[in-house]
Length: 339
Ligand code: P6P
Image 1 (cartoon, helix red, strand yellow):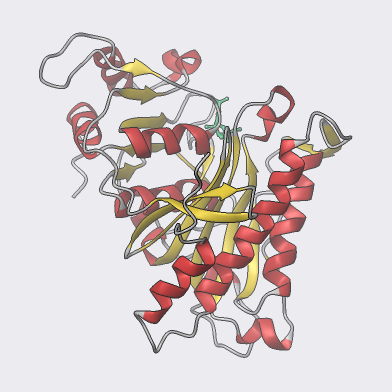
Image 2 (spheres, helix red, strand yellow; image 1 turned 120 degrees about the vertical axis):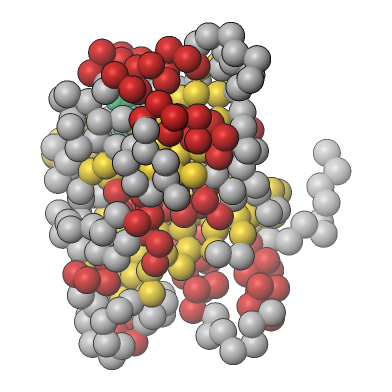
């Protein structure tokens, strides 16, 4: 296999970005490298999960009321550890922890950013070897530097994110992140142990063939959503239908596929979960930021995800996200034109 050694690693890429902004402090670049380091450590355990005693339940229940898998805890500790040890992050919010964590040491209190993350999304799939992922969201603090970060730093609307990204632990391991300047994807090259630029300047195709939704909840969806899903299954020369239904049950894998190939991912509100299942701060917001920078759209069916003002760390939301034309077609069913 001829490996192109001229491919930029993540570190080299962030440094080239930094060179374009001489006044930048490099804190965000270092934060991204910290997150990538934790991802590489998690990747090692995910790749051998079937061989060591890291499968299965940890015997605890998280704040979401879900069985915590041993890998969830391991992943949470890896991301929290590198961010606490680093010099760019003042505190974190995690799906696995009841409340946000203030690092509150002299260096961390001077740090510009806070990070929210889902350390291992889709972890219910670990034991059956289906792709899982990490999702993260970065905000610039609004609290006073030099003092501990505050809850308000974490409860900013998604449109204030300075960066967001995800890791997909799949047939290969990819690190994808967005700033307002663009979305770039890096594939882990095991021969050098570095994430290497494999998907520069990712753009979400304005339309696609894939629609992703849990059909098992079909009769719990609002009528407008049921009509849209019905339309996805019918021949329609205008929108290229019928679409192909692809739903892995692992959000990172499903949204990543639709980001690259074009498509729409839906987790609507249900009668069982009237506020939706997915979490706003560390699932919907980061992916909404990434997909919008790439040219797509993301809503809760009524408003732009990134405009929602959060009120609590683990609040949930309905989510519709993906290719612009498919999202605009959905809006003709829901009657909510997102500006
Ligand atoms: P359902 C995994 O638990 C997750 O949070 C997302 O990764 C995934 O898209 C969704 O839930 C799947 O939920 O109810 O369809 O099994």
